Image (spheres, rainbow, N blue to C red):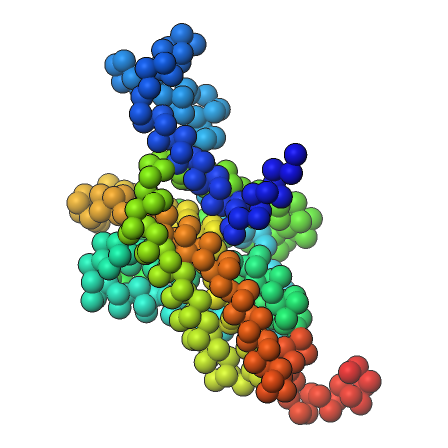
Amino acid sequence: MKIKQTIEKVPGGLMVVPLMLGALFNTIDQLHLPFVMNFLKSLGVAPVEEGIYEFMRIGGFSEALFKTGTLTLIGLFLFCAGSQMNLRVGGRALKKGVILTLSKGLTGIAIGIGFGMVFDPMHGFLGLSTLAIIAGMTNGNEGMYAVLTGQYGNRSDVGAVSVLCLNDGPFMTMIALGMVGANFPIIAFIAVLLPIVLGMVLGNLDEDIREFLKPGETLLVPFFAFCLGAGMNFMSFFEPEAVWGGLVLGFATVIFTGAAGIAVYKLFGEKSTIGPVAEASTAGNAVGTPAAVAAAASVSAGAGLMSVEKAQAFQDIANLATIQISIAAITTSILCPLAVIYWDKYQRSKGIDGTLEDFSEKTTKKLREEKAI
């Protein structure tokens, strides 16, 4: 059976399919069908409340893995992602990585904050929130970026992925929300950053550890996606706000972050601008950001740095934001490669080959003298 291959035919399938399955199972569970509950009772399952039994709350490893393990799995994912942040990158790759990280991050933050000033930041136009916009627009699909730049870009474009990994996780989103009045305590930032930092330190100290943890970047995505879905109602995926909000977020990510990256690349003298277009996507792992931010908001409320009402507001929008980001991830996984193909053709019509490194005339002359190119 080609189950994995079938799932991967769906754009962003390793994230989307488990997310929707989790939501489907949870929706069935919440119907509290008598024959299901009677069967669970006969097995000795402890009731969630008097007379109520749920097959996703049977306790043990099963409940921990498929229902309540969201934050643990996301934390482990961030640890593995951090281990892939290679600090020993070349000068050009470092330059491009910094440019792309900042341009994409600042563009997403600016649009998210601007949106919150014009509309309701928690539940604005098409149900979009500042949280959903920033989380969706600042975190790119680095796997797709590596594939696209590997085919249409050059070595330094591909090498920039080591820096782009800094966008993974909810840290940038929390900083942006802090700029608009969400008062997260320092410990909340430490709690988010610690797995990433520890992974980064270990990955850079030992190449074997980096290789050992590398599969975790993809292996854990379907597991935490299923857990996220297990807290949702399946029908939420078909609500107009979820669908249209996610589509708008996806198109906005490709158009605005791609255009901003191209402009900044040009500003810094780069001829080929394949990299910014290849990075103009929403990562599947960004679906975990709303849940992480909601958890941080609860910590803030407990510390007295945020009102209980505001923390609850983050909890209330987390599910819708997660669905919108997942739809944006699907949308960009289709649009981004098409945009790269078009942009490559456009560049070539202008005499620019994105697969070749851009060097200064002095450097090019030196390399030719050394017969390097």
